[in-house]
Image (cartoon, rainbow over all chains, first blue to last red; front, side, top):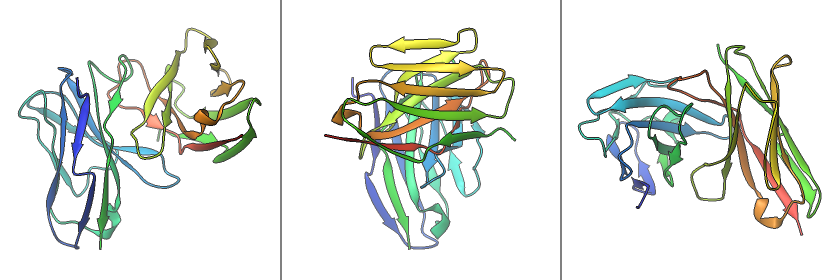
Length: 114
Length: 112
């Protein structure tokens, strides 16, 4: 199993540009989530999904959209990038909710918005 | 709102010494407390967790203790090795919750 994969590893955007961060898992996990990691602030939940077709907002959802059309994929969209969205983004998955089952993280995407 | 405070932010120890990282949580209904290790350039990885029905859990050189009354929990690493050098995150969650609340992280450096 590849586990949780994320693409790209690095990305530089200009303010106002849009892009999609890709996330896929091959473990047939129902729960998937997106976090952003900023220095001194730990990991903050952006959006999560408890299954295909179901998504919900986390702590910091503004400026981001998600969709879950399949169990395997959970892309994160930035509609109009802002410098405040410069961060490292992690996708994670677990069989059920992370308070019950082990949550597996992808390798991350480092995004810089100029 | 829910909050998890983690201390210290950086910790440097000599190889073979012990390391202790402490976290305090605000939501008294929290009952699941995982610890993650993040190596350079990688995503966090679960290393140990504890639920509120136990006070301590061990796995080889690592252990976690929980004090529900004081609402704090700690990670203990004994006989530290250079490969223990990483960033460690604590987190807290309610039973069956969809989300974990993470601490701000501790950068541990084990000096050879």
